[in-house]
Picture: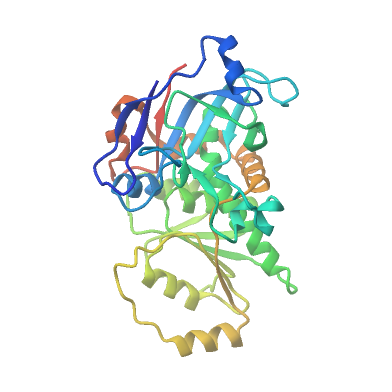
Length: 356
């Protein structure tokens, strides 16, 4: 079985490798995986995390192994399911990426592995566990999320949507500290996370503005078709101070501008990771005065647990499937994986495909 793997920390080491086969054609051999689902991969999304791992920036192989199989945004169909698992052959499933630490910490013990406190978690395709960029994989039913047949391959968007579903959950929890009635949302960045954040904002009936540098390609129309506003201007100076900002770029200057742009009791959720390669001057005293005097909140959010995946499935099921299909701008066979990692001006989400 061919898989896309990399030697973590070694730039340029990615390539297709042969893995021991899974018994997709011999159900009797499946006894070796007793209690696990046997899943045939249908699509794996490629994102900035994959590009950074391929570049050697980070990533950790499973204990005792040199290579890490890539791919954490996956969807597949169950080939074999053990009795009592709650799954059946043909079911579409999405694997949860993060696994709790073995201790476990208080958060992981409560099923909140996305809030792990000791850092000993594993993440498929990223930290200490192989990913899903391969034709088939085995999956613990406890970490499989069922998706409706109507969503099908579009469920490759569940994992990134789970990130913004968690962000919105946290925003609403924070807003519940007072008589909070948000009306305006600013999303900075129109990549997949930004567009999905805007989708969830519009599903909440909120006036939404999406800020990005791109002036052509599919992004402006995708935003417009949500009933949102696409903008390439500055964060501030638009006449309406946002109640909520979901920051998806990780750009230091954009982060600072976003915090300064909110209205009183504004909430800024940071989902983008900064590179740290550029210093930005910060008026710490001014930040302190603003946050205190206006009851503002700035917080970071990453990863997701089961309820966020389930919320993501619900949100995508309610969305226009034609709009979701337009988010997937390129479908690339596994054998052409290098093409999938190329950045192209019109890209939104690029996925690796696996034929049955």
